[in-house]
Length: 178
Image 1 (cartoon, rainbow, N blue to C red):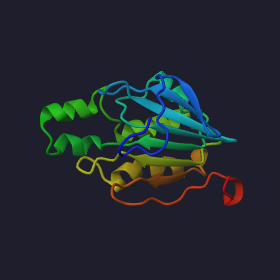
Image 2: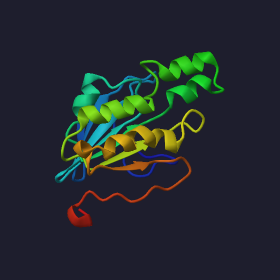
Image 3: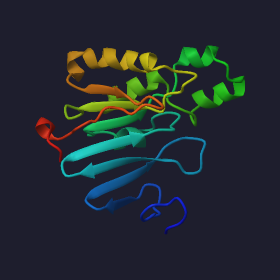
């Protein structure tokens, strides 16, 4: 399918379905959010596995299982619970954000990282940070403390801040591109 603003092929897939794009294997999985059939993905290329999960109110067992054994985890860390509580949003919006169909808090992201941790997890990128109810410092605070624990070392951490280009991440041995 092609059309205005669409570059290349557009392919439909079923939630939970897998597909190949060139040499990359994509596996979709359902995430709990108040949208029409939202999904997360794992992407495998050669010996590398990347997990991407955003717009999820809580990490279900399926989400947790799919994100295990990732080399790179790109994970929502949407809000700081105290900033959300004290912030300017109407009460109904705050309730939606922190609901089981809303968004992951910094604390929930930290807990999920602990659950999916394995020796091959090398990098975590926190993204989908609210500009109103979070800050890069708050999002990175708990995760940085976690990653300083010798059990979780040497995982590195990046924050995907809105309106800013992040650093390049290489998952190849000795920083050689795959």
